[in-house]
Length: 64
Length: 308
Image (cartoon, rainbow over all chains, first blue to last red; front, side, top):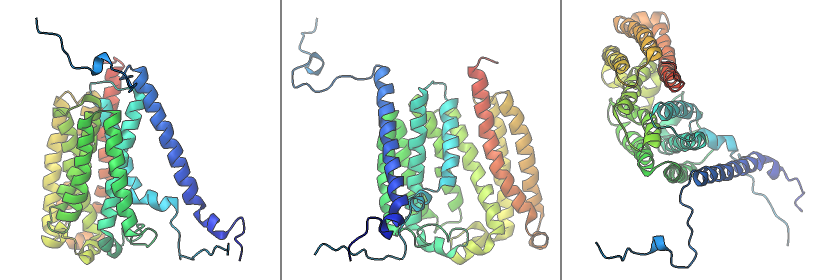
């Protein structure tokens, strides 16, 4: 028996699929919002750029 | 051979069944008390981060609810009040409840840490551990003081909210803890007085089963007296404002009268009017907690608006 486009199974699981989908979208939106707020508040903006950075190097100056 | 045959299962879990695993009604209380803890704290927080923090605290609480339903499926099935929960009702398998609980616990703790600070996240992790392991697995079935211990788990959310905003805890946070901690036993023992068959059948050592109903009535009164002392005492700390003081005086007077009434009744009288006083006390206890935290919120808002 070929599976029809709208098998009864699809209907049965619709609530689950829609629910999980919406939850994931909401979670992504939440993450995005948190990121925007944190960055506009001036939190750490540095990412790895494969080059030595001043802030990543040990302090080497001699003590005065 | 390209045919697919769907294997029929009697029931496919719906999304709402998994939502029910998180105990949405308990969660709404957690959302409210955590929000008050966060807003009453003297350190202002970005509204969106505050919103996210409350969401993750609630998610952690929900996760511990799922763990509770995984472990307690056997006794939930016996009790009328809980028999329709998704696991005993057969809509969600017990191991699925465990998976949901563990996954959401980890997610909630990590996200709360990233959003606010790791002290608050650690506190949330401890609360989940406390509710799921110390209360559900260990003490619920072994001591009649189970309700007192479980109350501690329910009392942590306003402290986590406070910790999310300030990065620590203080006297005010502990007072909010005390308010819920001392409120839980009279609230649940009043319930146990009129839902008596349930706990007995399930073999949960409720105070009503182990020490009798007279002792339970005495305990309700004793806890209510201590609760009233703490609730009114909080008025004299930085937590209390004029609205809180007024609310605490009125609410505690009503609550004490209710507790005395329960204490003075015996089983014959209670049986005669269908546990009317106990049911009234139980219903009022919900309002009692809601209005105390509502008053704290009103005072904090007025203070921030510079009205006193």
